[in-house]
Length: 109
Image (tube, rainbow, N blue to C red; front, side, top):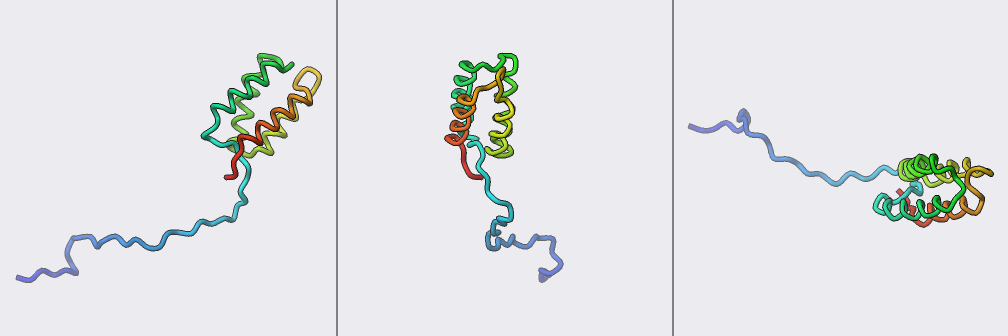
């Protein structure tokens, strides 16, 4: 008896084609490096402990800044930090230190 291969239930072998090319329609942006969030958080806490920012606001500011920097972009995180610059919030010097810190821990993604 011969076996009909066209009507068999055996699956054909998988075909592995060429790798898909990455579509770079979106521009790469500077974002917080996800591998370095721990050291970034530590350095940012040092800046905030010495700042004039209200201690009850510091933890939410820290979390929001990290979220914006790692999910949106460093540029948006800097804008968010600039909103806190005032007499009762951050000073210009503290803002510039945070801005340099963001630049140091950034990566293009």
